[in-house]
Image (cartoon, rainbow, N blue to C red; front, top):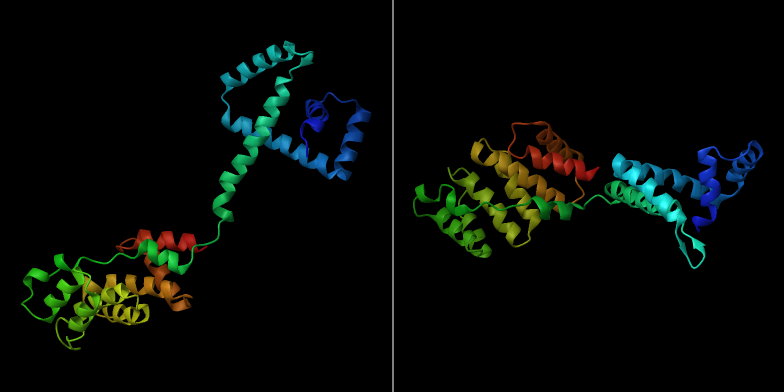
Length: 250
């Protein structure tokens, strides 16, 4: 579609410069000529784009440049500056539409992408490590910090259920399992921490449980409900991240 082929008639129509008969003919043609209709729509979009991005002082300059441009000649050809501004405005309108529509046209990120964006392993060296006696937990934390995941998993697994350090061990076991990409087992370990009464680990355990569920996908109604609860709880440490994920999933 060549916009310049239609510009003069469209411009005259919008400026009220057509006779009654010509105006009626133009409107009838709008209903039957798809190319003319698209050009007319783009003309209106170009005006909106110019209104959006051009200050009043610049508009005055454009009018002056138009007068000067229309008086200029190049090889006997009159330069229609106003026509050029229209075409530039049309291009600007298309760019604006692409810019504002892009977030709505982009597909929602996958659970795998969301996990990669929001998962972050805790540093086991700065949480309780110094106050815990030399035992399987400290050895496991050291291995986890050194990314020796198989050794960390073996040491964390030595701490039995009922031990005072069991919940903490399960929480870090989840991170070690993530390190080996065993997300199903990590999900179970994080679930134990999430269901515990230990405030240091239940909130973080639940958040990492949700992330591993996103990674494994698809997210079921129960997990989505947990995510919504966190997104609505402004007191949660993960409120902002949960709201971001909910927004991205729409």
